Image (cartoon, rainbow, N blue to C red; front, side, top):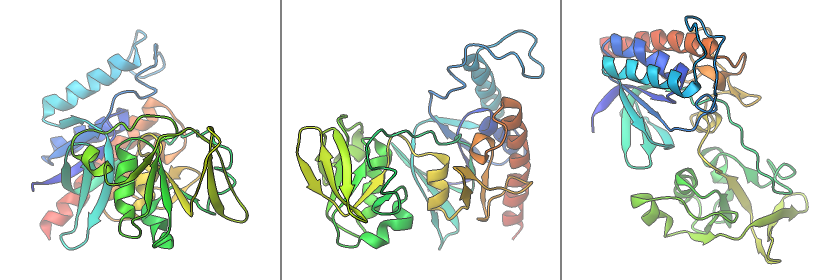
Length: 298
């Protein structure tokens, strides 16, 4: 499989800004992201440098994408379902809903997580049976009964990761239909699937049971939350990247504590403005150029 120089996760202002630098430096760059960001829904943007008249977020994003494509940046409108580091070959593998892509460096620019799950007991049992990272905590549930809360590609991918520890895995969609296609739909078929709306979680010191709105319940040892799509922090935790207060910690070069992984934009916290995201993307782009060139020199 072809090895790219950099994969950028997120096609907002920060990700696209970084891609302009990496592509112009002749680094083969792939940007992966989906539609539907909060900026895309913004009707008016008036406080951005160089824009005399108000512009919609959708139009501004479109201009940025076309600018990147003219340089040769590859754009992929897909959801990232998983990411891993292949130690033997020293590259990153990014899994989407339809394929896999490999690269020397990764930029996380997917915004800050905003998951709100209105289920009684979720907060109470965090760290006591409720987890957000199969890579971090799957080991503790060997041969136990575990569940994945979610109905999309991210949830199925998390269930697949748990297979290394247990075969007793249930996908809880909380009233929604399972929303996966193709190969992932086939893979989801080997797991138990419960589509009942969830009322609450219960237990003593640790999670023990899931209660449904139809009055039924199910015993469970652990529940991994994989609601909606994976966030920047979800991916960071899996890769051993340090996070704090739902933000990825970076240095002045937008580098994380893990070599080859960079982050920029809202996912790093701070001022949530387009200008900030663009600036951080530029810094990240230059840092990635230096990193990839150093690898090639070796």
